[in-house]
Length: 261
Image (cartoon, rainbow, N blue to C red; front, side):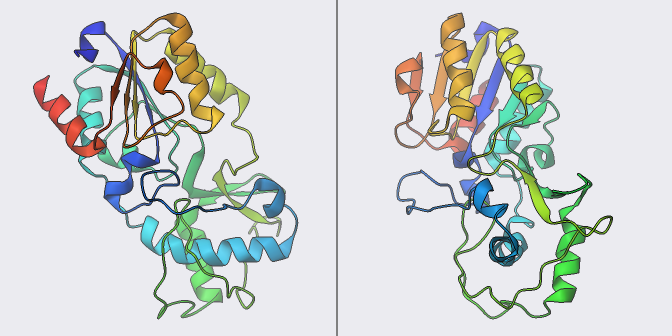
């Protein structure tokens, strides 16, 4: 297999790429069954938002300090060498940009940003984290918590948590990410399809392709007849579309691939 002999490559990454940075995934081998909050539930009112922000505030103390792993660094090196057309990531952790990648589409948004559901103001997550610390001093500091894939933790005792509102209009705040049941903005989707059209091959790394938001681009690549390589631990929903299928670790495999070029 010589993927990069084809020319410019578009890369689609998923949660499996960030597990070596300490961020768990939803569907990797051995991952427990989890039921993330949907956008409908989040919008249902203060109680759901309190539960979300309490858990997410505790989780941010871990996700906010995550650093890129060798897989992220290898993809950044491949971009720097001119091999990548675009990197489309389903992850919200921002680790590709921290690793040095610049041609990145954050398909599902960024967890390090916050948006007001009322006025649309976007602010840094770190700013909100500091406000929540002030409103909830010592909250969860002595707890042994299990991290969840979307940046929160497994924790149910959230009734006493105080939620911060928008500083501009006092509206409810939401992380600037696409929740389950929500849709990726149409201009973002259109740009990704155009990127696949302008590429000569596709590499999928660390994604089970269970959700349509990523799988549709693999299907589009297949319709175009360009080579598709899927690198993932375990089976994926797109295996039958792949030209080559690698059941392997992302970090070591991408590092080896970058070293050969």
